[in-house]
Image 1: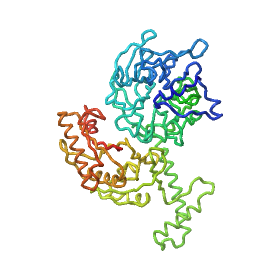
Image 2: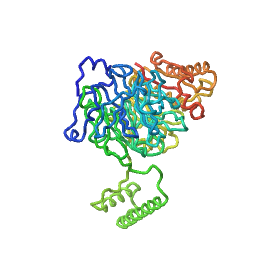
Image 3: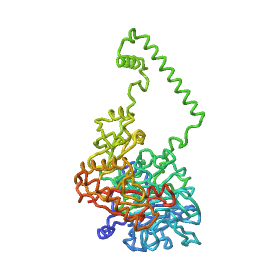
Image 4: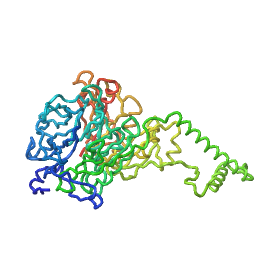
Length: 564
């Protein structure tokens, strides 16, 4: 590996410059460099073609279309007759002066490539192979596609019907998040859907890859902390919504103190994976290989079959019968149980049950099934101090000192929501059912740092006006007041949005009035006017398809962004 001099490192603008790192001895025995392919420049985002060629992006190469400041042109390497990788060649017909990334191969003669927006429009484009070269066909029609980042990562699924991608777009939690889009027709794809806060954080989630059954997601993220770069993680999709995932876990034998990205198997029949790592270079990625860590899904996505449900029910009835028999024996042993108070009676039964439990059993019967909800930071996934409130339909709040107290009061009809706040974090407002069904018993709060954004989706306005539609909207505004009172140094921007129906000029005016109405309410409740800036965008920044009622409802919104 030829080392870069300092002038080249400084020229690279720092976006891909990452810590120099080495693998542990165990990892070094399993990880191999792709000889003949790597250069002093930035090799990243490998994709294997149907005929076994390796396509990848190379950043800051002087031969790129945009020269040494170009984030990535498309390069290709083939294996020779001895199985060695040939010297890579730049694929000029797929490259522009901006960042270019191969997304996948719909068929043996077609290729999908992301273009940053230089020379060709920002988005994913389709090319068709003619001989050894490619001819441009068309851009993919992906509704509401927008990437606010210079970086992009994406993969076409094995069946060609799903694109998993890393972009900074509408609804992103922080920097780049992972989204999914589904093919609707020959050239029509759905609006990118954010995979949710279990996968995405305030940091960067990049270079995603979906297993062939679309159950396991592999991706790179900088959630490791302690000065590390990005590591490769995996998570399992738990249902059909694409927003419910298992807690991400790190892949074995791949990660180092530097940065690893773009983890993908060579083929369905190959036992090795290719990825990029900064372990052997001063900041830029090299392509490496390692044994592919294939993850087996733990459960089916669909509901249990009727026969299985019957078996489970029979098992449950048998267990209940055993408990009933044990309780009967307990009551016979207690001579005067009927004279005890109700609390004493319950305690006596519990004591005898514990005494009668087999010493070798794995569990004992207790009176409590309480499971604590962990409130954690999206930045480093560490638990944080927080305050809990129950909220009623009138917006009145009652502080709960502990989660046990909250659980005891949650069933009362007067309480409709749970409000969670923590100094330095954006608050969360959840319905009772949302609180009770949090994935992995975790609630993730986003740090209130510059650029953090949330949609105030519970604030509703009467159609065509800036008047608040219901008491729920006032409730959310009161909670926003609490947040701004707890974080007195924070300044925010309120951005109003409408759908695309009607006069664009009137829509822009209406969106500004709605943002102004919220600012007025906040200032009346003691928040300084200069801490709140407003903008009105009308229907120019949709986050969903305006051709459907559901999409238009999502587009009618107010977003809050933390400003410096």
